[in-house]
Length: 206
Image 1: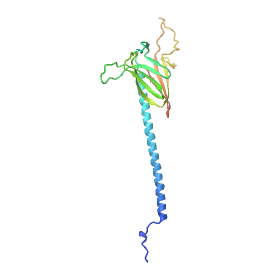
Image 2 (image 1 turned 45 degrees about the vertical axis):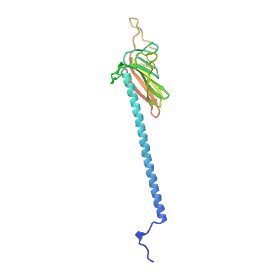
Image 3 (image 1 turned 180 degrees about the vertical axis):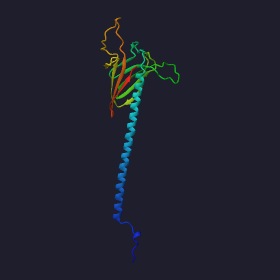
Image 4 (image 1 turned 60 degrees about the horizontal axis):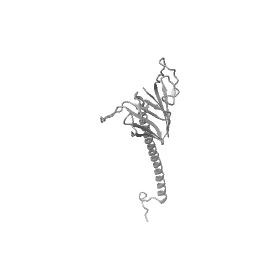
């Protein structure tokens, strides 16, 4: 009985098992590498999205603060409020430059406010400056996962305050027995955000 040529001989069971083992090992390595790449891509996309939201948040803050205008308002109770009211964690001011591409019948000035609620930084604004009792603010969520908002206010003498107008302003009265108006020069904004820590920005007020 003649033997089959060597080229026509089939693989043995052992050879098949070895080949399948090698193939499985390569497949596991390839999947692990692909999974690492996909995970890194997901993290990069998430990081980029968070960074974009941060940049947009500080863009809004910068535009509002740097366009501060000397226009006090009256609140819903008829009480006069200063052009800017600030505490260590809240900010409300009147700004100019409110764009009106639709040519609506409204002012180009805008009253805006910032505060933290449920770990979200909110920006609110009103359609009118002098509010009535039925005037409601329009809220816009700017940034999530915000733990704290900290504000500081720099005066013309380069002194920092945690409230504006400052309560401890002790400059002597002038020759007309009038207390001089303290000028706000800049506002320091510190946001503490999950995954980013403290982010500090300084905006010129005028």
